[in-house]
Image (cartoon, rainbow, N blue to C red; front, side):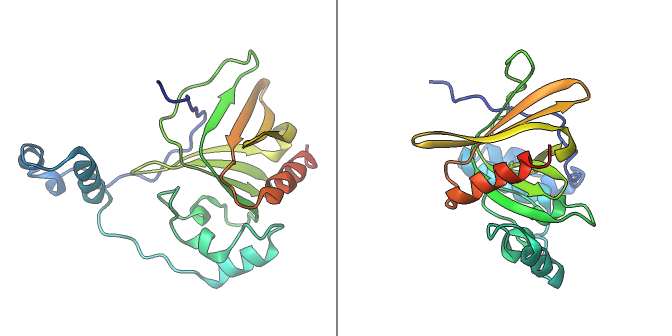
Length: 206
């Protein structure tokens, strides 16, 4: 059975990868050996990403968490790479932007004005970052994240669609005359009440 499609549009350009070079010498030897596909993918990821970056919780992260509308925003979730993103979520905040909700999910579907599904995306790793000015859908990948932003000024509707056992945050927006609707599967988010509060927060700023 084919997996359910996911989709992205207007992806923000991810941080550039280190140029391919000496770090990939010997790939042919590794491929021809006994390394499995999973091990090979992990090895390639390490070669491309270079030395692991150091991430620390700073006073800025603590202040952002204190000022957030929801306890879903913590200094650690902002500052450290999680199990669903390659980069720390704070990486995607603008200098004067304030996070309000930080929700974890799986699938992201996007439809256009004709209820047609937009482009597919192969990952099931999703973080929804709601700030004082945007909704940012961070779709995690093995080497980089894709970010899709919806300015709150473009939102036309926001609500939670619950059909046991699933829970979706639905955000509709009009991007320069092009209506789009985002369906974020947040069933796995442990703070269900926070999903409802996030929808109210987004909708109140239409």
